[in-house]
Length: 123
View 1 (cartoon, rainbow, N blue to C red):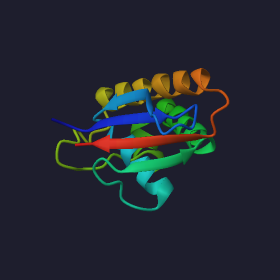
View 2 (cartoon, rainbow, N blue to C red):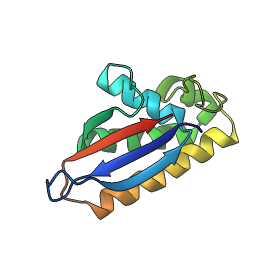
View 3 (tube, one colour):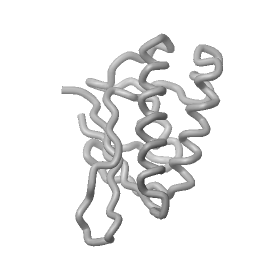
C-alpha cells in the first residue's frame, strides 16, 4: 500500500483512459497538484489538469532540482499523509522528482497535441 499516482489521457475523447505516467509516493507532486487546484486531492479523485499545468509542474521540478534542500520546501514542499512516504528533502526526494520529470516529459512528448490530462492519486 502507498501513494500511487497516475496521469491518464483520453486521446480519442472516447471516455477510455490510457495510463500515460506513473509515480509512487511522490507526495510533493500530490501537494503541488492540490495547491494548483486550490483544494485537497482526495483518494482516487480524478483531477483534470491543462497541459499548461503539467508544463508548470515540470518547470517547478527543474527549479527544485537545482537546489533541492533550499528550494524544495518553498517550490515543491512535501506533504504528510498515511502511506505518503518520507517528507525529508534528501536523495529520495530528489530521486522521486527526477522520476516525475522523466515520466511527465515522456508523457508530453508522446501526446503533443493533447490539451488535458487527468491526475489520480490512490492510497
